Length: 123
Length: 160
Image: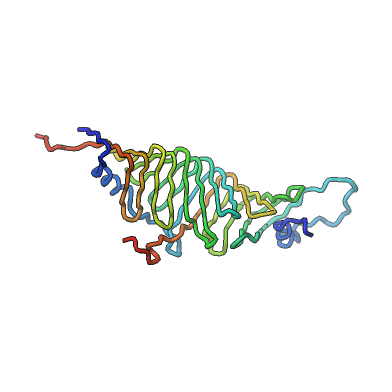
């Protein structure tokens, strides 16, 4: 299992029951079809927090290196959602904490509080 | 009447522009922390480095300040907050009737300091102020211009 990306594991765990093939044996030598899922939530542990991506549909590329998410796709960083974004499609790098959002990107960012609001001496 | 100032520090124009452009933005999250809304063609998140890059017709809104540029880099910390924003590529900032343009604009969230560089120009109506670098304290409205040059219109009271 060591070669399976983290995101793959998570998506399979959360969404595979809705999309698993009926179990027919694959033809020998045939290329694997892309794995698709619906109603997907990906929780990707990242340094210092968690990247959560959601969409109506998602497709793994044949190599399993990335996950393409479409349909009300959104990304949230960490539990307090200081960084939220939505787009037409999101590509998640399954091996790390990287994501590419494309098409009508809209994001909401929460800025760090000013130092003087926390007792600083700027007056 | 139009007057052009040299490098001695156009305080009047700075004060006029600062009064219109620069006071604490109003937008805030539910937690009371300020928020920025951003739209763009693409966004690349590199969480390992705490960085997000918006590209393509980037438009951001911070309270009643609006910003347009071609590229906006956002840096955030592990504590869950955006600490800096770096806009580049035809940066335009607007607040009410006051407008600013520059090659780059950098906002440090923890200090509330906005730095415009690369031919920065502040303009309101016929008044304008330019320099090598324009540094703005968004909370206090203090503005510092290096190598300042300004142009402004004054009424000398000569009306009949």
